[in-house]
Image (cartoon, rainbow, N blue to C red; front, side):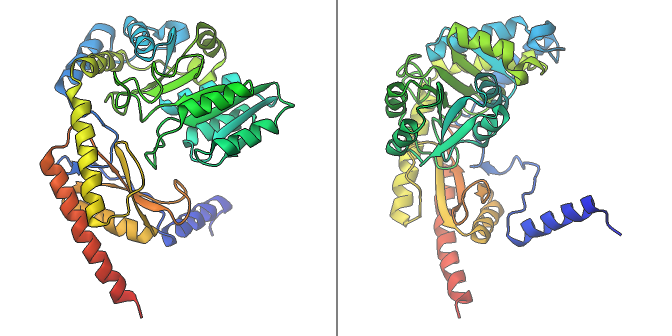
Length: 388
């Protein structure tokens, strides 16, 4: 006889499998061309990063041994924080072990039940969870809708502290936040603005400083979050801002205080990635050309692409089962593409999340476009076959 917990787990698993929402881990086959990951500049497998990581481990050890506030804050961490502050044009930066922790820690440390938080409806889960952890009064405005944000801010006159939060590049849609508009609207109501630029850092901006960077200074965006495991090819995250903000996070951000610091070799690898970001701008140029070509040729094929100017190119199929079928057929042809379904995206908005990288060559793009064209024909026949 099953106990209540075993029965509960089985029922949830059966329901997810029946709806085509069950997620599976697969060990990455190196032979596959990866159009699913976030290695936008192709740095994750660069041997120079691997060597820098190995040298960092040789100098400082495989692990940091303790949290930053105990004995785990090492010279590589200090140098990386200084370099990230310089890249983003802020006085200070603070390292976190993951982007999820950076968002949780920032919101938990800054907000409480007397804080009003205003979030874009398509914000990353870590931002939504951070507001819940802080017990803040959270309101969500329509995606990229400054008018709706204005309306919500006007109705929140009772709260003394207000925080507007948005992704810089939306991870499932690839579109951009109107950072300037968010900054103006926030300032008009005395609110701070927090931007999570996880998918913009390293790719966008004149120097790879992201969708915020130096263009939108600290007065416009007081809280800037970036991750290191996407375009920079390593791991971890940071928050950049004023001296007062960073010291506040050091004192009160529980995910920072109570976590072992990232391995020093990882920090050393990230320093090498930042060096290559500066000295090899051709990576961003090549990536921009791939994005432009993909969008042009996908439009000629009539593929249902979302309106995205970034490395993230969602192919909107709508149906979860069709999305899984397309992803599996692409895998059979040596192409790895993410099949994104609810609850990650709203019901009826299942998609293939195609991500382009500077590591891709023209031949890789040829293979992807040909496979998508063939699948479009195959899917049309499939629909005709099942239609009574």
